[in-house]
Image (cartoon, rainbow over all chains, first blue to last red; front, side, top):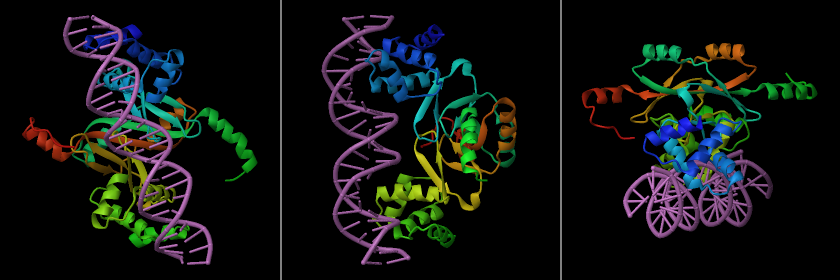
Length: 152
Length: 152
DNA sequence: ATGAGTGCAAATGTTTTGCATTGGC
DNA sequence: GCCAATGCAAAACATTTGCACTCAT
């Protein structure tokens, strides 16, 4: 997998530096699939302390332009990035309690496009859909703690 | 309209200062319905140069918490705000060429929720949907002269 | 007159940039 | 060896905060 991503970079004329390898590895090895620039920086520097923030940002920009990653900005205002393997289109469920994100493959774009065509002359190209709520884990926590509060 | 919004603020214990009036007026009088903090600041200070950035941010936060406005963060990474009159749920069409935003009332949330229930234990609370593409104006420009690019 | 609200200035956090140096090809 | 890529430091933005002063109530 890492080889394939590096090959894609190389094919587009970019050099395969240790920093780029490390950034790609950070995405591949992390349990979280959505990472901020700061998280990428921290993950790589946990092992060897040699990755500068400028390099992180410059490379995230390159990985973005070459299509290896996608950018997502959640409600916290910070940009997150994720691997864009196989151009696999999907959306996110974001837990309002713990911040964990889940991926859903379901996408309502066809229904949306149909409706836009009817109501507007706008030509849709891309879209962004994120759903905020509570994950299983935090749902369970809420059930337990709501016994104390007993409201609603 | 302004009176109603100010009454809502007052009812929740907030004082009606000139700065708050000016910020509310900025939203009410602007052609754009999505405004950034900087735009609010500039609009108000075009008339009288007395509104500080801290005050803008502090008041946007208050208007957010009292439900008078909503926050939207588009792909540029900067927060935008819009009036939340009548709790009127809607989404946005954002032109990739000129940046103009259009509002659509259509919302696919029911279909989305149905699907989430089937595939996940996640409990949806809120969601964010934005559609990027080209507005009528820029569509027309592209057809006429594809070499001429629009500003942002 | 009192505390909420404001202005100011400084801090914080994220992202970008100029420039000299380094390292992949 | 060449030029892209990096590190460093500083700048550019967006946003937040501490503190003294002001103004709506």
